[in-house]
Length: 152
Image (cartoon, rainbow, N blue to C red; front, side):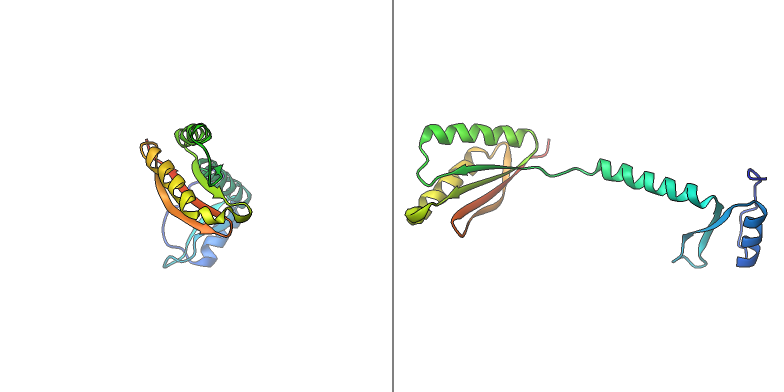
């Protein structure tokens, strides 16, 4: 009896429940907000299983944002800067967001302007791989800037 087709139409609750009981299935409310509410006669456990399966597929398709960090000092020399810039370039090519920050130790906070210049220089040189998401801003003892990868 399970494979038996029922004529599609508008039924009263009592009729729908009777038909569902007759087929030994459940009356499942698909869209309660519709006028009148939409119900379907099916196996409820199968319905829940398929719903969980759909949610799992959607979750797997969702992209996860990876954030990679690069740390500078306010007086980072050119060789170290170039080395870290290459890493930043690689991270952006891989599709990860880049968080570049200058950490000020002790009294080095007096070199805030040098830290900002360093981050702006990095943003300018990595312009072809990513775009600046937030300009450098000082938060406590670190000046932080985010660079998002460009879409392919």
